Image (cartoon, rainbow, N blue to C red):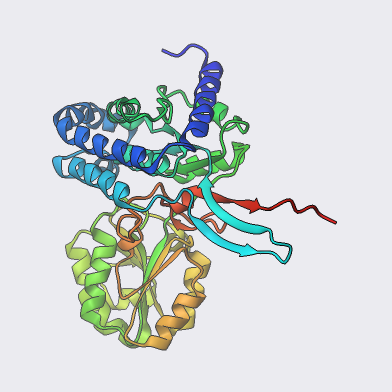
Length: 420
């Protein structure tokens, strides 16, 4: 048990800062060696990881976790293999550190170069999903950032097991032992102390429920990369292939309901509302989804319940979806920009001008055209993995992978020039 929380957090933060300075000098090969060694260890220790995870699953009811949240917490052989593959995929990605962004020669002969470099120390707060521990550690170390991981109490045993495995391979390849640290207390006060460590922590990234994000934003003394909600829409346009639209809607809503890129709201053009909603509504209901719709939606889906204003703003993270019939494309765009959370929104259409207008006007981190909202994911978009999906506009937006965990510096090379 940690008796002095403040002293503990200061020590962890100082260790991370020292590790960050060392990480700036390590080679890409060392980082890749760590990723590959760690992937092998995850596979070797799969049974032990699931044993520790079982302790968390057993306690899930104590924390009031919903079935969807419990599913996010669970580690299976497939998910553990997915973690290992994720580390290997990050290892295969180009190292962003040292990348020359642009370069120019000034009239006086100065060579001005912008070079990508690490952010420094990342404080990452997350809930439920233990596989995020591996993803976050992988991305931070590959981008030469030290990371302080603060997982949720509901995944404590799983996170400890994963952390000890990952940290145990750092020194084997010559990386600083404190490049990855896990906060080994569930005391909420620890978060507040870390959020005041602006001298040692460069950025905080919260990934979890709205209350967590709001707390971090209000208390942090350093920049925060965040998203509040995932109120994601599927809009079925008048020119949609309705069979395709049904398939995309079912996947967006039902493939995994407890994730931020799952669809929470359905908009349908009035010209195809009857033809689409009768079949799609029946498929949603058969899948166990509760539909909350406007009056026109309820004309075509008898099982739909009346929607309230709040329903259109709600991230359900479960088997509920709001629905509305709109008269035109611009009404759909206006609805999304008003009620959405700027996360992920999709249009299903064969009309290229409509797709272009939607993509341009919808103010979201990712816009999908004839594809599921579930593709707004670092792995799916070629980033290897993600540390979160940002709905901010500074410093990063959308899935945050390696490049989003970097900034840049100017390196100016001269031959004795002085300013006149």
